Image 1 (cartoon, one colour):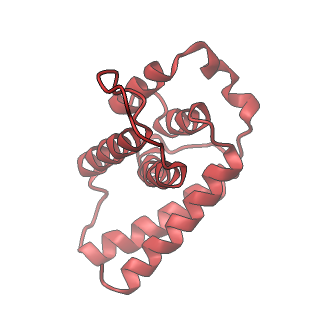
Image 2: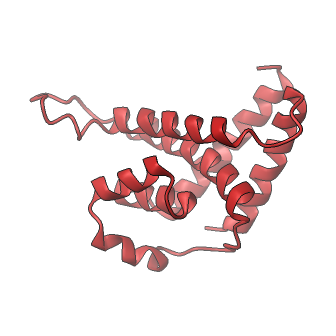
Length: 154
């Protein structure tokens, strides 16, 4: 997963969004809120936390992956702007330490935007069964959709 390339792509998209919105600086708090909302939408697609439901329904893997892509967009915005990220590329080996956490601990880390929000988001995607390649691919697919939205005054 080429994080450096993804950060550059996100920075370009964010610049276009800021210009379109007439903003002079990143709306950090709004981005944090948007990230949490998208994380919630991803978890709604995942459904497994709903302990009270006997029949949780079928997980739509494609919708779940799309929601994780939205999380990645906001995580990249936050990582690039707040942390001045110096990731270049990552491999699944770099996420082996996340094996010591259970999925719910990673979800908590994501919601609190504690530590590296980008790393936590990637770890969440891996824990949900996706590969780095899938995460990167779906990021660029959604990135294209977002550029199309800008062009069409979404």
